Amino acid sequence: MSSHKHHEKLTQIKDAVIKSKELSEEEKSNTIKHIEAWILEDKAEGIIAEELISIASGIRPILKELGLL
Image (cartoon, rainbow, N blue to C red):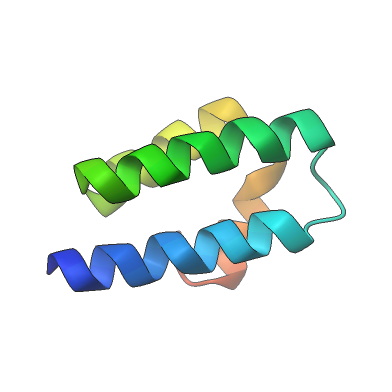
């Protein structure tokens, strides 16, 4: 997947996290910090999903909804 596509997916995840009612404010903050770092680092999509789930277990439904799992 191209860097542009990674950035688009990360932006989608970030927007969904911000809007999430399932995640606490702390989980949202921690998740967004990681996503912003990953946008700069351009990590692989599979690794991103695994790490997001380890940070905030409630994010799994968000990732599924976005077609990332």
